[in-house]
Image (cartoon, rainbow over all chains, first blue to last red; front, side, top):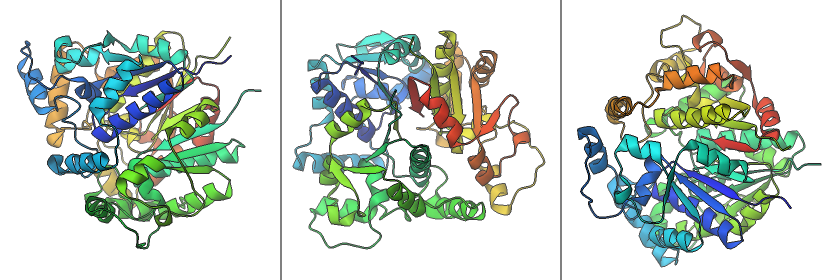
Length: 158
Length: 158
Length: 158
């Protein structure tokens, strides 16, 4: 029997792209596949806790931390965001059409035992600490991603 | 014999990225592969008919519809677009070098029996109706995409 | 024994995305995999030599050439670039955390015999000549990419 495992690298921190990643991941998990999501660079923003956590950062890391969106509810969209208005409009339309919100998609991913890995090197560079991210994550690097991808039949970079 | 089927998710609505998707898809089909393209979010704009079609939309959907480019000939490029000037320059240079235009690439894809699926959920959210899109499409969701991807040896997200 | 060959299409010319591509590619090569990187559209900018090379271009190609970043050291980042300030900040933070720079990543890729292919069609359109790109590249088209991808178990589009 051939594998049907899936991996998705979530590099983007745009609401629309992160939602697409979770919709594919949750769909695959619902069909019985093992799924691993590897969050790196801007994608980490989707996993930040909404509240400010007191951690030690360098000056530049502090600036990045302040400027980047804090959590799934704060992400902008990749086109026509207009300072957040586009994202807000998109969320309203999605709600009207009963589309699951990103926080709900993340919750479903956890419940379906999707493995969510935060890229340790990106966290180090951006000064994001484990306690600033939501619970239930693993922390690893590119070697772990590659080992998972080698066992998978669909590998996407989003 | 191993499969050589391919799938491409076309998430982007940028001219350069959509062209890349069709060039890969048409190349694979020319080599005898089955190819499925799954158009979602902004990627749907590449499939819109150029003319305005009278359909019922909510207020926000109407706004999205007006602001998003109507069809393959109206897409901008992902960098240095400058309100469309970049896309216009790119098209001129491509014409000078006999690069196939996007509308021609889409026509070739149809002639090569590439399966083009429009994401039903994205259409619903953005208020895009079947009659607003070009002919010859199928309409389905993530489960259909995943079933196709499971049978394929190359799966890209563009 | 199943293949563990990898291909990565580098479409983006953003520093953060190109770095991600090389980190994955170098990681895979370090684990013993054959890796092919296929540079197309904006991704070609990462391979430009930093100095101006005298070559014949059309007027529009000359404009593209002047406006696009010349080489791995000049790339901007995909978000919060602010006219290059974001990229500069990112490089400082990366240096503080001993992250390999992009020019070093490219050098490592060469040393690990990663096959780097520049897309001939994109070069033709953008007016980029072989002598403007770094040494050690191959020049080919989509058919070559597809042949490599057919032999690989992980194929990413970045």
